[in-house]
Length: 136
Length: 496
Image 1 (cartoon, rainbow over the protein chains, first blue to last red):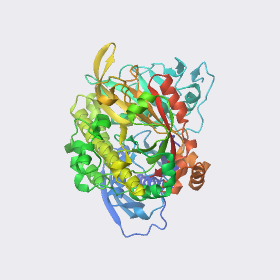
Image 2: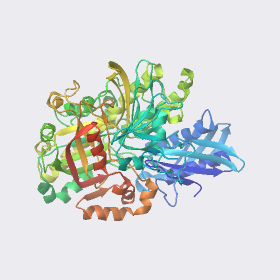
Image 3: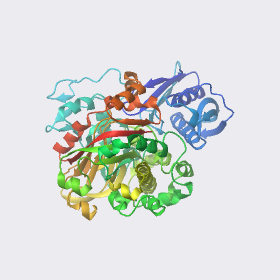
Image 4: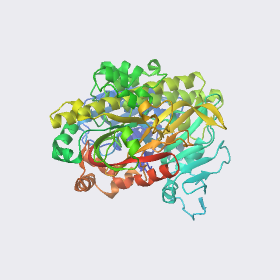
C-alpha cells in the first residue's frame, strides 16, 4: 500500500510519502478509496478527467480529494486508478478510472468528506509527505 | 503529567498520531462535571460532563484538546462544553456545544460538521414484541428491500422534489404524500429550518442531493426496530406516546451528499474570508466568520437549506418504514399506529435566546454531536409536550439499548444533551477485534435480526467500539442535562 492508515476514534485518516507532489496526490487518492474498498481488477473504460487549481498545496489536497468524492457519487463510479499531472505550481490535471459503485464490496465505511483537521502537506529531504483525515 | 487532579495518572498513549496533542488537565467540579481551566488563548474554560469511568476514555484521545480549541472561538460565552459521549472529532469534538454571541461572535461550520442536521427520528406503533416476533422475517425483509442505503445514488423520492425540499423540509415531503398530519408538530423546528437559502446551495450539492432524497447512507446510520423495555417517567412516556412492551422504530441519518458538499463548499469560502476579519484558529476545520457578516449569513442560509434536506430525508424514510410494517401485517400504514414520537437534530448551529450573566442574549448555539433539549414550559414546544419537556433521543450502539430522555428546565448548557453512546475505539481497532460475520452471529444470538448493507462493515460498528450508553445517559440524568423517560431494546437492525 502506498499509504498508511491513521487511527482516529470516530473517523479515519491516511498519510503517505512520495517522490513528487502529483505522486503524493495519487497515493492519497488511492488511499481514500482504498479505505472503502479495493475492486480487483480495476478494469473499466469509465474515465473522468478533471482539472483543479487551488491556493496552496494543502488546499489542493483537500480540493482534489473532495472533487473525486463528488465525481464518484454523481457518476456512480468507485474510482480505483489515478493519473495526476502538474499543470502549474498548485494546479493539476487528473485522469481517474472507476467501476460501478454497485459492484464493489465495501471493506470500510463510505467517506463523507475530506477535512482540514490535522492536515499536513510538506516537502522533506525524502520527498513529499501528506496527512489527511476524513469524515466517515 | 497527571491529567486528572485527584484521580491519578492516565498518560496519553504513545501511539496517537497527533502533532498537537497537549494532554489537557481536567479538574473535578462534581461527581459528573470536570473543568479544563482557561489558559493561553482560551477565552473561556472547558467543561466536560462525565463520570469517573467515562472521563478515563475521554482523556485517551484528543477530545479535550478540541474542547480547548473551541474555547478560542471569538464571542464564545460561558464555556466550551462537552457532553458525556464526547470523543475526538475534527475541529469540534463530537459531543461539543459552544454558544457564541450573535452580536460579536462567530459561526463555524466545524461546529456543525459535514453531515448537516444529522439526527434521529422515533416512531411508535400499536405492535407488541410478540406481534413483531410472529412476523419478524417478513418485517425485516420488507425493511431490507425498501430502505435505500450504501454509497452513491438511490433515493425513495423523485429528483424533482429537491428545491421544494430545500425550501421547506419535511413539509415538502408531507405535501407529496409522505407522512400524515401531526407529523410536523413532532419535529424539532416542525421539520423546517427557518432562514433557508436554497439559492446559495451549490449546483454540485443539489446534483448530489437529487438522487438521494429518502436514503439512509452508511457508516453509523441505521434503522432499528426496538421494544420499550423500561419506563422511568410514566407521565412523560405517556405524553410522548410510549408504553411498556411497545415496538418502536428509530432512524438515524442526515443530509447525505448534499450536506457533505454544502459544508465542503462553505468551509472553502470561509477559509478565505476569515483572514479578512483578522480571525485565526488553532485548527483549520474551525474556520469561522462573524455571525453578522455576509459570509456568516450565507453559511447559515445554506446550512438551513441542507438541514431541510435532512428533515425531509428522515421523514420519507420513516414513512417507508410504516409502509414496510403495513405490508408485513397486511394492513395500511395508518393502522400501524406508527405515529411520530419526535425527530431531533444533533449537528446544527441555531440562533437561540438564552440567559448569559442573567440577561437574555441572542446566541449562535453550535451542537456538534449534541441534541437540543428544551425543558418543560419552553414556548417552542408543541402544546402536548410543553408540560413534560422535549423528547431527547439517544441511540446506543448496534446491539445495545437506546434511550428516550426529556429536557429539563435547569439545563445550564444552552438546553443541550448527549446524542449517542460515543465511540471509544477506532474503526481500525474495532475491525481487527472481530469479523463482521462474527458480530452478526453474536447479534442474531442475542435476538437481534440484522440486515446489513455490507456484512464486512458490521465490526466497525460493533457494541465494543462504543461507550456504555447506559452510563452516558446516567450522567445526563445526574447532571441535569436531560431526565430518563424510557429505555429501548433493539430487536432488528437495518444498517447502511
